[in-house]
Image 1 (cartoon, one colour):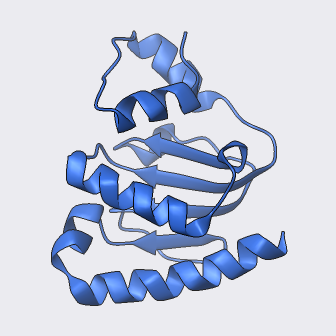
Image 2 (image 1 turned 90 degrees about the horizontal axis):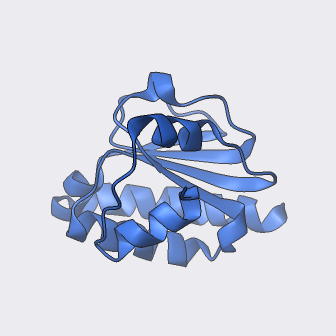
Length: 131
């Protein structure tokens, strides 16, 4: 029905398509090939979407190298073939391939959190450009 990329763009425009949960579960299970960065966030409001858009544009990845998933349940997230995974708002341990950050809402109100994320994004951008 909708691809993950189409859903991402519709959500960026503020359009929430009506899809059945069964179809959405299939989309979450889909895999793209050659994903450089998987971004996992909970449901986002407009300000958080704007911040995420700015973060992704800073990284400068081509759209076919990026996958954004909005989910509250990480158990539904199947293992992906991505070079790096960026988590926003999940209480996970960071590893070299999995980068954890505060929720985007917390980052909007916390300059120190933004500074730490910016440092992590600089390192990530350097590593992504080396791929």
